[in-house]
Each structure stands twice: as C-alpha cells, then as structure tokens.
Length: 346
Image 1 (tube, helix red, strand yellow):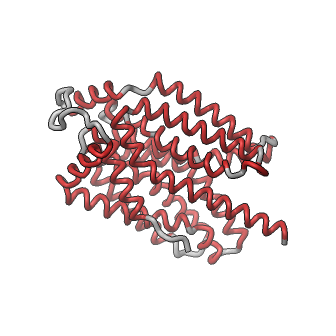
Image 2 (cartoon, rainbow, N blue to C red):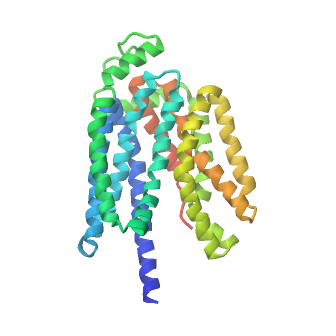
Image 3 (cartoon, rainbow, N blue to C red):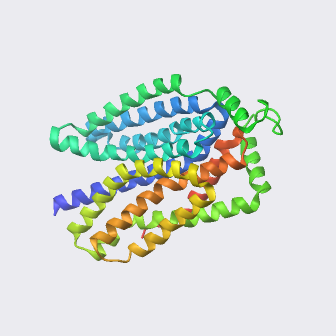
C-alpha cells in the first residue's frame, strides 16, 4: 500500500515535470528562431549548449539532494529542453553551406533529438549494471554539453559566413535585397514572417493544415500508448511494448531522420510529403490490430513519422523565406502547428 502510493506519487511528479518541460520547449521555439536570425547559428549553438549544461547540472544537484532540492528537477529539465531547442539551430547554418543536401542537414536536427532520448535508457542501464548514480550521470552530461559548446564556437560558421554562402547559393548579391537593413527587433522579424505567409497564403495554409493533421495522427497515439496497450494486452505486455518504443525511437529515429533527409533531397518536397502521408495510412491500418507484431509495426511507423515531419517545415522555410528570416518563419509555423496540435489528456 505505502510503496504503491509512493510509486504513484513519483509517476505523477515525473508526469508534471515532463509536461512543464514540453510546454517550455514549445514556448521556446519562436524565441529560438528569433535568436538564430539575429545572432546566427554559431551563437545559438554555444548559448544553447550553455543553457543545457546548466539545466543538466541542476538536475544532477536535485538528484543528489532530493529531500530539500527535488523542485530543482522541474527547473533543470525545462532548462535542458530550452537549451537543446536553441542549440539545434546551429545545425541549420550548414544548410546554406551544403546546398545540394539541405534536407539531409535539416534531418540531423531531428536525428539528434531522437538519439538524445536514448540517454535516459543509457542512464538506467549504467545504474543497473555499474551502479552509476543518475545524479552523477546528469553532471557528466552537463560537463559534456559545456565542452560541446566550446567546440561549436570553432566549428559552426558565423551569421556573416552563412549569409555569404546563402547569397552564392541563391545566385544573389550578398546584400539583403528587398529587405532593407537587418530588422532591429523581434516584432519586426515576426511581422516580416507574417508578410511572407500572406504573400503565399495557399501554400502556407496547406502546410499548416497538413502538418497539424499529420502530427495529431502520429503524436496522439504515441501519447496514449500505455493506456491503449493496457486495453489490448496484460499490464506486463503493455509495459514491455512501451519500453520497446523507447528503444526504437532512440535508435531508429536517428537512422530514419538521416535516411529521410537524403530521400527528400532525392525525391523532392512534393514526393517526400506524399511518402509521409503513407505513414499515417499505415499507422491507421496497424493500430487496431490486437497483436504484438502489429503494434510493433505501428511503433516503427510512428518512429519514422515523428523523425521526418520537421524536414518538411524546414524545407518550406528555406524555399519561401529569405535566409534572414529562416529561423523566425520556421518558429512562427512550428508555434502555430504545436498550438493547433495540443489535445487534452484523458
């Protein structure tokens, strides 16, 4: 009785922590885009790594002193999510340096997001086999993020370099034609993003409607996996299937994202989008089938689907927005899509 109640309280606390972190991450998408357009990918990579390092270190402290500082876990996890969101903007700089493979570059951001989730499984495994305390694991990751940020400063190109390569790629002069001087405020950046969307209302409307419907078709079943599996199978099988999904997403998500980026470079945006529609159709077919094999297949479709949709939005921003508004337009679109995709927890 007491142990069960304690375990239930821990689950509730972790659910709250995850919900806060997801909300903060959604809220950081647009500011991250602003920051990318204002200071460039190199600074985003460094700032994001520093924030993530602070967040992971805070989580480690919370784990070491749970009686007095457990509340720091909420703060640290949110900071880590925000830092990761900002840090991945640094990858986008390379889109213009490798114009023949823009979707592959974009896909690495989704791939890194997937494989980073594997660290939770690594932490559990190290604790089980080697007795490595999870608090120490978080502190180690904090140090690794700090070092990664220092490396990013020397590896990721500056905004000026990115704009020069973008101009060469687009066959334009290096001046920001038709935009005037670089916008001096986030409000101006947002207004110009809205102007781009109003210039192409049909294309943007289709993108937002498709992305919202697509994410709901993939995300909502993923969020309800445990509840759904408990209605189909025993608690033991349901738990095993959920654990299997975590493993598939961590490993398969990374590979799927990179392969999807290469496929989009080869197929083009239109054909690649049609391929994603097939993911929703396959998921609709597999989910109602009450067998472990069918549900494993459904999980594989979800992994592929969740790893690839970011490629479409990033490619759309690259095609419809000038390089100086790439981050803000993507942030506006992601924010609209995420807000439209929110659904109440049953």
